[in-house]
Image (cartoon, helix red, strand yellow):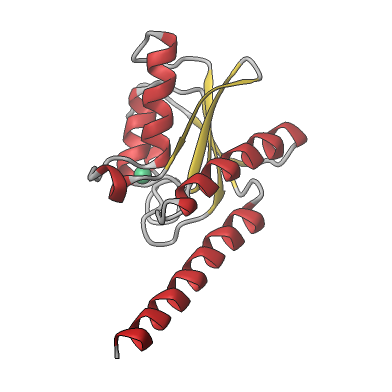
Length: 166
Ligand SMILES: [Zn+2]
């Protein structure tokens, strides 16, 4: 169930997810951000922080799901939508299916680990009893450019560090 959609509300929430991604950037983490929306309001946010937390599962989506579940006092999040700046990986897609989200909206595609259509599509497994709608490519250019800027700056900083070390 993949649909391309880019209405104003989606762009607005994606912008908020990008603001979360900035928090990750500020900590030197790969800048991915996520927000969980219920009834048109953000109820939880998260950003990528596996390095700082020494936690391979601390992706933006997992952080946001945990915060949303705690807030709602429910391990399932029916009626909730998750917005994330980068196509979710297998782990996050699995967690989002467990959470029974109604819809997942992502920005840039991830040709290396994307599990919403790029490498594989966990959301198109007809055998799964819960179906979560997927909307990809919302503000994809902005989200992709944001990540690219981070990696360009990081490579520059690493090159500079190597020069200093010589
Ligand atoms: Zn992930």
